[in-house]
Length: 164
Image (cartoon, rainbow, N blue to C red; front, top):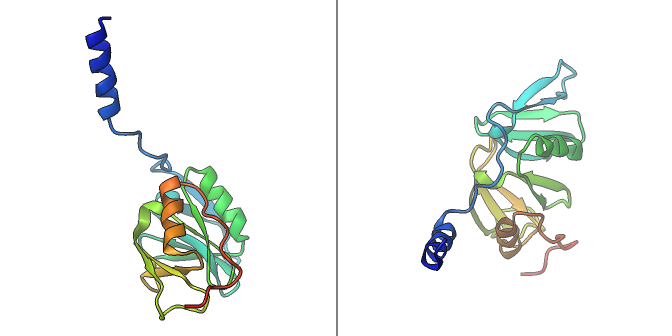
């Protein structure tokens, strides 16, 4: 190949968009054991918004504003969702517990202000939360944004919130 064609091919390759991040298969479902002791339910991974804890149960919020509660451990559910292809961003809730957010469902990240529980430093507005519009976390806005840019876990959140 002539040098001018090699250069043109190289320039074209650098202009092409980067491949999209891996997404769960459209038909991927994960089996979840509900808190009520009934038969297992199947949650579509492509519809998950957040995985966290509330009132002693693991809670899965979905884009349809349905919240599925599970008797299973939070980490167990998160690992199975990730194994099914769901990209999760692990953060820390104001009580020091782990919460997993789906980056593609994040609308905006802002300072938590005065309206969240003690220890909250950032508020993340999400699509599809049933009992509110945002998730308060201990990480700062800068830490959350850096984790989103990297596509991996943010640094560990501090044990206590810094005074304002």
